[in-house]
Image (cartoon, rainbow over all chains, first blue to last red; front, side):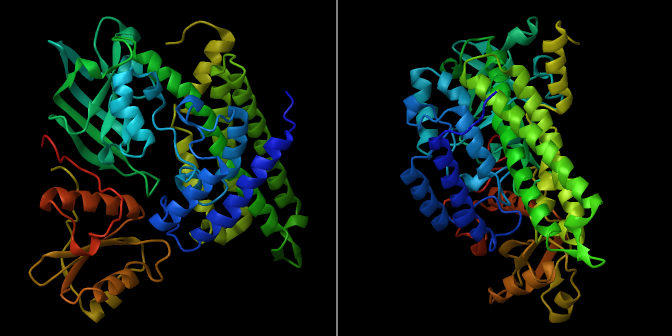
Length: 388
Length: 114
């Protein structure tokens, strides 16, 4: 696969790289090392810049106002946008805009008016609620939240856990079982407003990520109108599954981005730090760590771009997305770990971003489907058949 | 309400007490003599001496500050957000020292249906 950059791609990437190094990194010197938000005045200023550059709302489909940049180029941009302290989970602190919840593009016109457009205008926030206490890796079987028809409405009962952003959201995309006999074909997707009686955020779940947390949700006879069914009744699993595969590519790209930065830091440090009279970069033990980093990086980068290229070409990319997610998350974890080792004591401190990436990358091996599930997907596609 | 409150003993805002505080990261609550919360805050990774300096600086901002309590935690951001959400659910508003949040939302824990 040829990944020679076009002149336009080179210009875009140089622009993004300069933006990260000149606009984002200097601000981080004054922010808390775990911060994921910018002060409002900086955020407004930088959003205006990305809009001026034509890069705002990168992942929004062109027909909804996005800039219409292909996924390979967006993946290359994501490599750059992640190269700062908050870059893994808050690339450029969100000043390039988000796409909202991808499932909303499949909504009907009325739902788009009530949910999608307000999200794109920044007026509403949503959450995605699939995982339950009974599990998240096998949603077709684990979903125990039920939705029972009552006239034109549905009554939802159940629990969700590890749900991001639910405590500050206006609505959620919630998956519930509507036919207990049909397995994955008995799940329906609902748009649930957080002010609907019976919905509550039960508690915050603290994780390795200090600024972002998950929440436990409770649905106690929540009455949801029939017009809030997203897609078709009993077809919700397909909506969830499509999102899970597609999200794995940018998820991998973020891992590659922070690993690139960690490698850059490791090399720079090794060339300036002396031990026993000579630079670390002259020591074979350190050279090999840097070489192993490079191998992990190039592998993850190539596989992530391959998955993006297949998606751009309209080819099946489920296997490639699974491979790039697991290779990038595991490879980046090793790269950051080695970079910390090269930095010695400084690598453990909050003075450098390495310790934050180390914590956050650990989550990446579980988030968006644990890597064991990615291996299962690849095995299913390579060997064939269904695994239970 | 099921959010986790800061259930730690109150301490007097006294120089010697503050000087004995740990330099670790964590969250704190500053209150007046009647126990009314003036500010919730955290000692983050940029604080010079962790909770010790963060509490001293926060207390200096409030003339009525008389006591405080704290909790050591590395998850200081999410714990701080949780404490704000719990306080908002309990009181319907934020402490005076936290009222200016700009457009940043505070989470709602068990705020409906509970």
